[in-house]
Length: 118
Image (cartoon, rainbow, N blue to C red):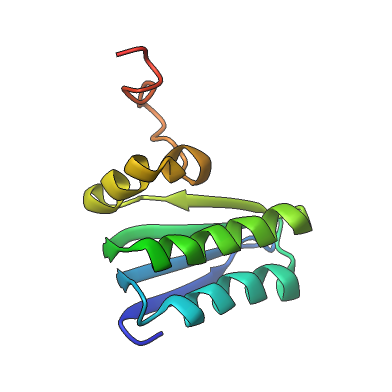
């Protein structure tokens, strides 16, 4: 992927972890979408985890690629989760409602402010 760096790890149970770094925007949209969908449909792992700790920017096309991956996973019966989402990216995903759909809450975190009635 042009502006984003990807490292792929496969766990003993066959689950796949993709570590993304950089910007998820129109420059990487097609390659990210293909990577997510192809990993799900070809490998059919029990779960695909997308680690976003080092993602510094995401736009609507990057979000669209993540949703394409989520939709492919749902159709294939594969788990799909975003982890370690960088603060700026978390803010963008929360603004669109995608964070609640795609991301794993921190183990010791309470409910998100909009879920806590406040």
